[in-house]
Image 1 (cartoon, rainbow, N blue to C red):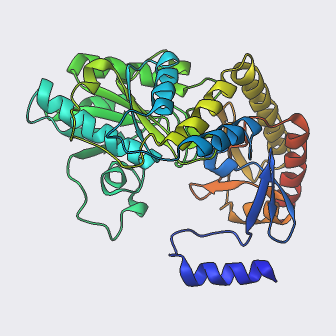
Image 2 (cartoon, rainbow, N blue to C red):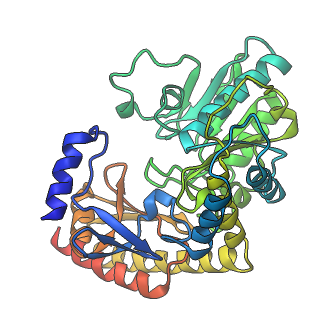
Length: 398
């Protein structure tokens, strides 16, 4: 009865921007969450890659508690110790020299777009402002990031959009070459297209894009909002491809469950931003930075990413491939890296998601017909075994 009342009140008071599943999640611990009716769920959606350490990880909770007793918020008019510590940690474990903190992936991408344009105008040419992005990409829902996104279905009703973006097919280096003009300031890509259906780049694609950027003196922006923080078996997905970007955006798993985003850049590019060029009131807030420090320190412990994430990713992929042999007329492809995996179906996958929900397992549908798996990186074999059993039942009956 309580769940029904909460759903009714949500419909009454909250803007209708999500097509939500009919469950109210009240409590979480590790791989599991519980609904307001007491029902237990095994979480293979992971808050869309946010809950990288699972729900309410003790180290993250303790870090938040300690920081909450010390200092909740001060303005960026002052220096903030947890922000400085977090920035240092990110720099020590990435290509970057400088960090800008914000509150989400969309905000990080918005900042990246502004920085790329500012850098190009100051250091290359006043006419350089265009950014090339990929079809089927997703970079956010603010006006600029929506324009950067290569999916028309998200844009209807929001025109006129921000000028200065060109979209090209993903994995097509020849088309990118043709799209580059004297006005191009950056190429912006996801290492793996998450919202686009877990689409991976060809082996040398990102290397060739990097070479093009070097040749034409344009910036490479990598959107690692979904792929970062150990999700693919390395701290950042660019490490798989033997390249480094000029600018990178991260969010989701960065805070272990709290809202935080960041844009990272080389010294050369970051120098284009000066006081007043870009800011956000809550960016780098002490509380979220404390949570992010605890999250990264846990991820960086020996064996966590390279052993745990890769081993469980392979185990999950093997289980999904077994399902593919059982349902060859339904499952088209299994793809992904680490613990970001997609199972493409011959039909829409919402019915499979709902069937799994009814059986106590949370999974996600993206691109219409791809079941996406983004479990907490602490997932164990027994959790995966249960998922595979439930998926088998769902595919058989949905």
